[in-house]
Image (cartoon, rainbow, N blue to C red; front, side, top):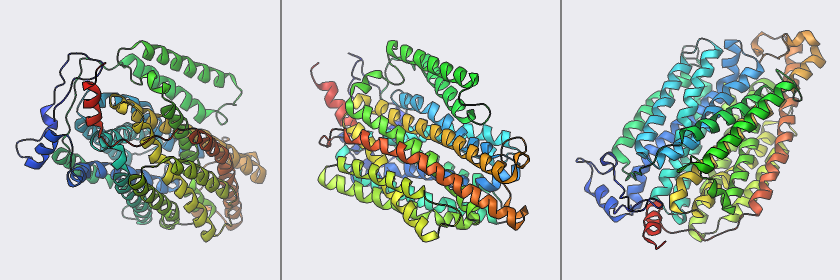
Length: 543
């Protein structure tokens, strides 16, 4: 591949890092593909194999943990707010570091960065599996979140570098299959591990480590990308301000309404502090030579609307669905294994709709209709789930979750495709990481804010049924159902069924705002050039 100078750095030749070229023992076909600038379908699949395994292990770990959380929190003596924090901590660290991973991908070896992110994820998993208490578990989730943030940002950047937008559909279908298998396998494996006395919930963290090591080794062997080096530095002040501002607001959304009132002085301090830090971040980024998130990309209408839609999808989807496993196990009284089986309809919905939509987009080149229909169907799924309670039948639940999964599958990946297709190649990394960042931030806000809504609703219902003494220190502990007498158990199930339905009722209008955002995205023809080819053409064009 002939590597052109980077746009915006006139006269500076780009250097290719030897570690990302075909090595001495690499197949000749790989080197030939790099020289020609376009990889064949078989070579792309080979190169993406390690990437797919990395995505698989992060999704697998997430779904295993979500199904095991009720047992984990009960064993470690955590409260309902701790349940929320175990999820929020990973999302917070993942969200805060995504822009930095995206920027480093423009400066350093993408392969090395992915391997680093997977290694951090493995370390976090090892600590989590050994956690003696909730505090250590929360610390381990930070390491997992940083690693997952790198994987989430870099996977799509690598795909865009090798595959033209017009052909991304069929590869997205492969990723949809990986996503589906990992998500289906996660709850099932997690349920079996939790229900197996000689293994237990700790193996929900340990089991992903061998897969992570295998992904790192496979990436070393199969992923060969040119690295474009530029004489610039990472905007560390901007990165730190972004992370500090986001973390401040997310911590506020997690604590408000539970540890202090929404209208208290603490809320004013957190919100004003977070807003000030983000304002300073914008000021710093606007003056940086090479900012973490180039503000100019938001002049692009497609990128801006896709960011808005991704944020709203993150709020609604993560905030609404992360507590489903708890609903299955507490409100419906199911075992972890059965709870995993009950999540299958939503997963099949995501798998089928993302695969079919990807294939149709590749065949016909049209994509906007899938965004609009997907966002409408997703909103309908949330409205359906807002009617559930402790007596809802399994068949009706399966229909509701399948509808939600179909909507999510049509929407999420195609928002990234629309943005990547509409920006210059030099901004692919920035646009992709921006969408991942805001979707993750929306997810963290959704889990924090809607988790606070759930906590408050559960606590108030506990007070209604048992009085103030039923909540102890004011926070309803996640109950261990095995220790409760039948009359109390019936009330507990009704409390969690009612509170979960209220959660989906709040998520539905948030999802509907995503419909309004995608309607105004302008559909443009999909490019037939890879990211590297587009970059070379743009660099060669007269300025």
